[in-house]
Amino acid sequence: MPHSITITVDGLAEEVPQGLGLPQLIERHQAQHKDLIVEINGRFVHPKTYHEVELNQGDRVELIHPAFGG
Amino acid sequence: MQERLAGWGPQGQARLAGSTVVVLGMGGLGGAAAMLLSRAGVGRLRLVDPDRVALDNLHRQLLYDEADASQAAPKAQAAARHLGGINSEITLEAIAEEFQAGNGRELLEGADLALDCLDRPQPRFVLNELCVELGLPWVHAGVVAAQGQVLVLRPGLTPCLRCWFPEPGEPALTSAHDGILGPAAAMLASLQASEALKLLLGREESLLAGMLVARLWPPSFHEVRFNRGDQEPCPVCGY
Image (cartoon, rainbow over the protein chains, first blue to last red):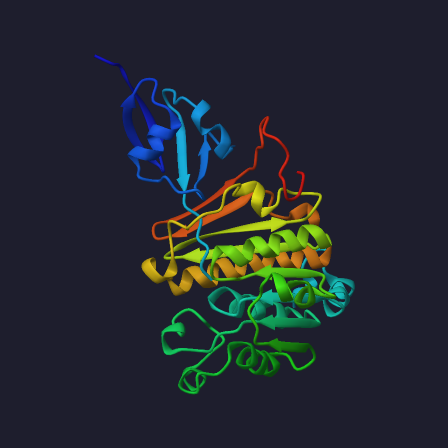
């Protein structure tokens, strides 16, 4: 039975499996857009490094969809 | 009254009077931002938009009225007319053209600053490349539904738009699908105009450093700081 951890996504607590990668979290939130901005614990995460990021207990994640209307 | 603001004074006002700002897109963002800059006394505004005023614009496009909509008035010309009634001492250029790679350089000629109030991603990245090439500072804003973001972009000093969005694609949010809340457009335009005034006044120390993400429904403000990590430099700006 895999352990779970608690993270915060867009201000809401969420329980996720330990070892969950950022791409999987993005997929869980159906946020797979190229223009997505991801911030973890106050730091911008470059899109080319998403696959290197594993989530840890207590992480605060923001998944930001930019608005390009005027 | 604004001259009493710290660091402004008659010198700051003269600086604004001698400035040229190009406003690209005269919709919900551009109309409100241009109105604020004209009231502040920016000496020359070049207003660029190929569209005409429609009734369903009026909830968020503060410069226009029912008469403009009933005549389907060109936005650039209608904006110049209304802004001229607000401040008769400034020069207003109305250009009913779509900003694109072919005319971009000409539209930006002589500008001290550009405001990106465009309504879709693609021309924003054209503007990004041109501003990097010309060394022209600009302020980006975008709005959809009740949220949006603002960025101050200074070539050579800050990341460019492509740094933030290395692989631009179809946006998740669109005004056609998600609509635009009138107060959200006005809020984003105010933030954009405020950064523009700081740039024109030379108040770099007060500029927004990251991407300001603002939401109204429910309300939140959040600033994201850029971090390239160990990635290679941006192919557009080299940052």
